[in-house]
Length: 477
Image (cartoon, rainbow, N blue to C red; front, side, top):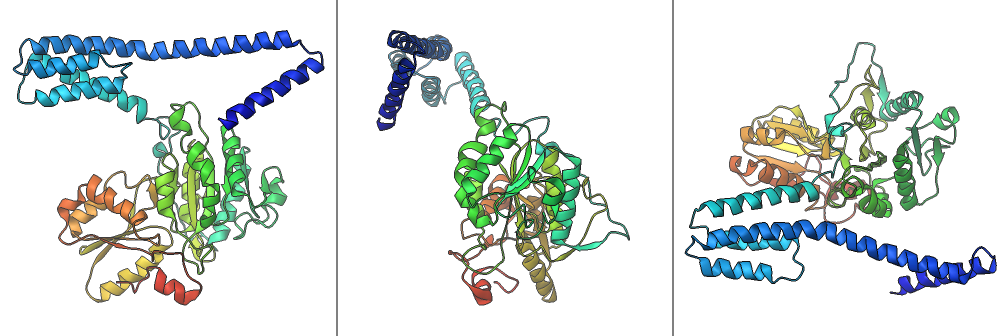
């Protein structure tokens, strides 16, 4: 109410200013205000009629079916009561009609008449309508969907150079900015020093401050800039320096970016990439892995978790061929690890929602992603010495997650499964477990209880000892 009163106070001040400037008289502004009120009221009336008239038509249709049911059912009294309740309801909505029909069908479950079948078909059509209205367009459908970008494998040759991870990304961004004039990148320290891990080193000098630039320490507005630029045809890479600090920019992401396609029925898009880095370092800050927070607040945005910088480049390629938004979390401890640079650096793609089997095994399935994969690889070698064969799977992306049931098929073979990451308990590992056991029906293939291996239920403490005791590693049991 206070905000409403303040708004009207502002309008009054504007009217007085207009009058003092001789732009128009008080009588004229009063007439404009009355006309605006009438226009809004008329629009409200038209909108309500446009919604409620089809509902009234459905009520008549359902009541006609009720009449035919009452003529043949042993539950005529009960169905008559349901009909009268719907008839006497004040401004019933479609949901009220559906609730009425479901109540009737529960009573009629022991019968099978033609009007009852007609009522069931009516309900089925309205459920389909509800799905179409309320459960579509969360992600882009059809052309330019990231899920439809063709997979192109990385190509290596004897001449493929061995580079530090940051050098691979630097080369990738350099070539990408040459190829795509709409690509821009910005964030804290991205421009002058080329980001804290040197992925953009030297690129501001080459491409200019208009395309690669620094911002203040203000994650909220960095995200806002990215959304605005993306909606206007640019391809922004908006950087959050460390994954922990994405929390300061979460509000515009969850309120605006994640809902944009959904609330506009796919008519508006904002294909921005949020670039950040996290995992596996030591200390309360810069080390977090709040993947559960992202998973539960950013449905509508893809969450990409590459295990190394080559995979990151492939995911960037995928997203830049699409017109959808994503958060891409690079491995903070991977920038100076050596990797082979693909010969087709700008062309290869990593498909979203397609896990990769890194080690074939028969005794247990181990699922992880990001930096934790390297710890999992160590564990696989240790367990092999004890005769335990581990099938190691990199989930690669959390949203979407395993679109083709690759992990479920592995569980069907091994009958045991462990989900590992360094989020807190109940975070991304719990999410992955539900996806596999419930959605992929993996529960029916278990010979022992499923396990999650996570970080402790607190932020990472200081020092290597703190890291060892607080996050999962190859020695964890």
